[in-house]
View 1: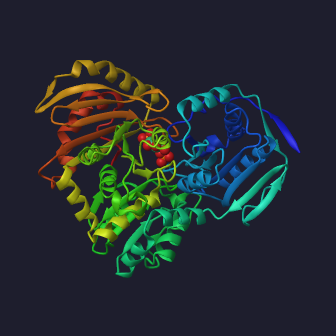
View 2: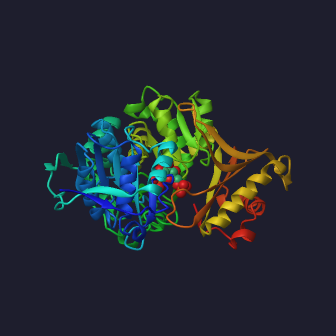
View 3: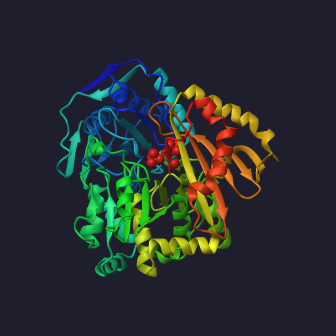
Length: 539
Ligand code: G16
């Protein structure tokens, strides 16, 4: 039976860079989740006759949300749902299933790298028929719908069994429960040379992969241990837990500190990596060596011909504005077209769909290619392992070689978290107003070349996006400021610093960037306005 439930709108259902992200308890308020889902359905002109992929990263409220979603989809006339067994599906695996089945899109329930649990965060990532994030025009429409919603449709039925693979029906809607790992593994086997990777492990190569108690554990066990032959136990924290075991599943130097400490100890393996909650982010480590995501993108681009899927070259490459310029130097020297876009994977999707780029990446530990329309954590690791297998070099040797060829960008991001949104918005607005007056100004040996907002003209759909404020210096140094789009409450100010260097690659990054950090913080009056004497998180 289909029920029409009367509801009141909520005023805060605006999607950010990675979908709708809220405190779990906010999401669990009466009708909150249902309102948002119905708003999406309404904003896209209904879902009658459509097919969607559904899954999540297993965090608290995931199982409940999926059941509610299924009943709403059936009530709204969806033709078919393809669902990961037990409701699990990583974001990249979901994008692959969407592309493979030519669906109308999908819904992945995840707040990505944000903590989970009853007191953590919950989120909804909605992808359209591109199998990637929807354009801003659509998220704006969804927000408008959410502000005027008065009812939603839901089936009054028993919960659907998601444990057993196979087909079932709810009303007229078909439900197919699939193994979320199988298709993903098959795709990776098409991209990479698995025989070469097996050889690598046969030769005694050791890895540690930290799934951070999140969704990629089962994918990593299947690929690294079962298929490629990495030693049993190479994958740690492999069982997805509703609260990620209390971890903050963000693979960076702070939140994956255990792994970093391990790799700087005498017990270190040859290679280590971690993924985030929903498996789209990655961190790469060698013995006593950390690869910045910006360098990683540059290195993958430079070595792409070693990978079967990219052996004939790539269309082009793209990075977000806040990502270092390392990849641009690789692209320029090798005559590869490159694009600089605002933060948000949706900007890459347009470039991929129009065959302008093949590879792309962001400083926030996201790297990917046009094999899907999301960033892909395990793909990035397999790419690195393939470079190691083909060159016989270590992570550190590969990175140093890249610096020697193209220069090294000393790079760091500083996050000022938990800010009052009014304070953060005003800081950005006042800073923007001040930018024109900075041109030509000297701060010690640093002279401002240009200071302006970052504005992107999308070559595909003609949309114009303003995202972040950038100060460029005559010595190629760069400061970028932007507010995070993935928080669940308050505001996070991100300050990104870069200083390219062409001779000395052994400096301490923090020390090297100290003068730039002081300029960044003085110019934006960070301490004065936020009361923070230092950033909460440096990566
Ligand atoms: C999401 C988007 C990414 C974007 C990131 C930015 O990542 O998918 O394209 O780079 O947000 O985060 P912020 O706005 O906080 O800097 P994810 O992994 O959270 O889905």
